[in-house]
Length: 120
Length: 110
Image 1 (tube, rainbow over the protein chains, first blue to last red):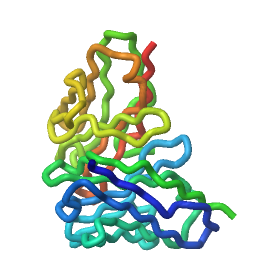
Image 2 (spheres, chains in turn orange, yellow):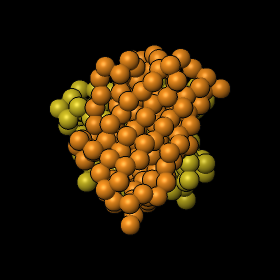
Image 3 (spheres, rainbow over the protein chains, first blue to last red):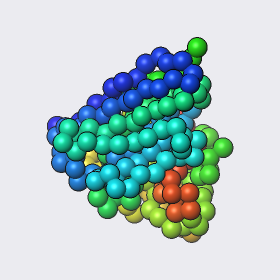
Image 4 (tube, helix red, strand yellow):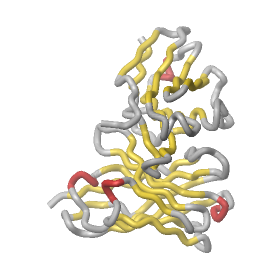
């Protein structure tokens, strides 16, 4: 079945780095754009980053520009989020989401999320 | 504070019709289709509506949306207890080159 599984979350000190992974299965990964969305404890959803199906286009929310980098390996059906210079306000559950062609940036499949806690 | 504005809460009784609004601007709602998500407590969000009132398989037709200018609305008819959840609007913003989420609306079924 169509599935996204995130991994790589954990507890990290401020200023350190973490790389999240999102493994896709059950669909043709290389034809879908992908997103990362996060949710701080008790807060709403915040979009983080987007990568085009072939990696040719990437976009980020302002608060992570220059610190986070999204990438993908279509041979491994995996999208990544490299997070550097982590701050306390990056603490959140991080979800990856699938964006089908011509969907208007709709995320029709979500992973279960991976938790990132930035704390000393 | 979100660029997309949603009421923080909404409520209704079983069987009622409720609407949740989402207000934006010409660079987002005024230019692109709005997507709506439902998030039940402790779970990942679920896509409800996309691309001008399209519903993914399994989403009942009790859920519908509409858009006028720079505002959009999600309507839920025949309200059921299992509809109690947080609802988010989302849209691509041409100026910011970002996906924007509304702040979310907590729906309570009385």
